[in-house]
Amino acid sequence: MKKSLAKLWKENKSLFIFIGLMLVFRSAVADWSDVPTGSMKPTIVEGDRIFVNKMAYDIRLPFTHISLVKLAEPQTNDIIIFDSVASDKRLVKRVIGVPGDKIAMKNNKLFINGHAVNYQKSSKSNLSNYFHDVAETINGQAHHIRTNNMASQLANFDEVIVPTGQYLVLGDNRDNSADSRVIGFVPRNEIVGSSSKVVFSLDYDNYYLPRNERFFHSL
Image: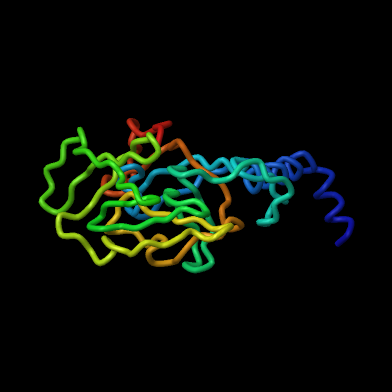
């Protein structure tokens, strides 16, 4: 048995080293993540594979959540990827509140530290009778969100203060996202990276054909 393993290693050493380095790279440096749900529409759609920068905030021990060096802290508007203990799955959401922020929502409109967030009608065409897209501007940065014409129970919450070491996150598809309104605040150590780009995209409703217009699309 030992001779067989030794022979296998000798004959395939380069391949094994390559595979090991790739696994370490994907664990600690960069990876991509698929998005199976519409909770981040219209920013991210089902079938998108987004680039995950795993060194956006930390240098981590590979295959763990142990931070060896903190490089930065998540900021408002960042799209983060985190391994949620509360939902027992990896999620993609937008940071809305950082530690110390006071956040409230009334009829799908955010109030951050006592100030109403600015909303404008989206320039994107929208013919749906069920939802509409608007541009939400937080700290001078605009992004598009989607809300149902008949708001869900998630459309309102009283003011909360984001605790130290935790973050309030929301999906851009506000009435169809299990985010901090459902799972609570996100602990800093659950965050594995951030994303700002789609790598490639497959259309689930059209035989998984590539959506060429979304390849390397900025978020």
